[in-house]
Length: 159
Image 1 (cartoon, rainbow, N blue to C red):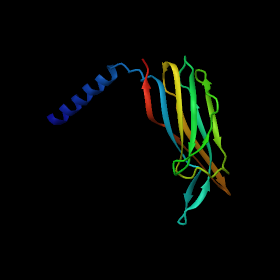
Image 2 (cartoon, rainbow, N blue to C red):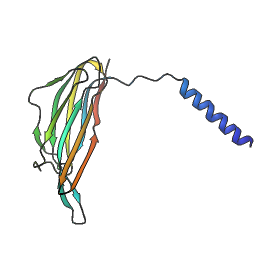
Image 3 (spheres, rainbow, N blue to C red):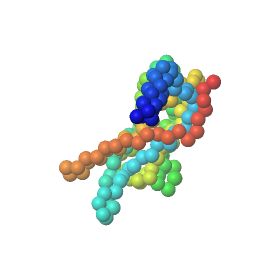
Image 4 (tube, helix red, strand yellow):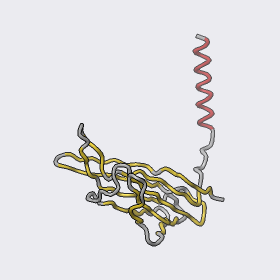
């Protein structure tokens, strides 16, 4: 009984500490390189039949005060070969703005292990953008959709 009361008391003290601690601001950055896994198709059934997918690369500026510049969005296939540069000229995204790049469902060059590598920067330290891959496809009466989250592979913390 005493052990149970001690455990409850410790739990309450821990909870009180968590509730009283101020929330820490999210880390801010001035530059990142982000890897985004993409699937131009997936496999279904025992025979690994392909299910083709359209892909939307979504880049969303989450900073409420500062713009960011998207420097590049490069598309790589399963073997890691660069197959297309989606940005010819840098793109400025205003605060809370978004942009997207589409890989058509009929474009099968990427394969099941395709990816985007996105580079962005800002003159100021900012909250990092949300960068996602959105895959969608339909065949007969079957539809599928899912998303992938970008993974930071290089970054510069804001000063």
